[in-house]
Length: 119
Image 1 (cartoon, rainbow, N blue to C red):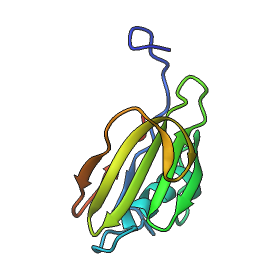
Image 2: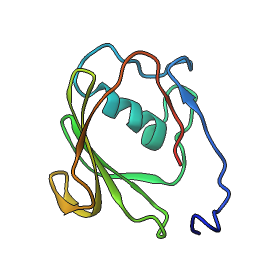
Image 3: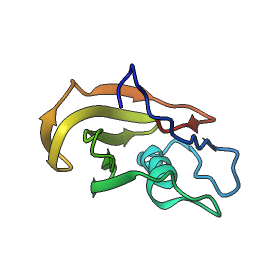
């Protein structure tokens, strides 16, 4: 798989308007809960997107990683702000706070309705 030779994958769309979808009300940790619902646990009768794991979690922080060996990078979220926090990509991680950074974590902000389509 590469940009020149992509692998076709089914797309699953999640929306805040889904029945029993987790909602944003302005509390720290809610966006992490949304990602967990979409990628790890599912919510209501909605099943999670296959192919993801969460090897580390602590309070408002979580590390998400694809189970595809061709895409081994980790994504660390620190959802310590009401509508956001920091998000960074890592080559590898040994716990929720320690890893070999691929980029400088950036601050993000989310509001209202969300839609998340895993790549």
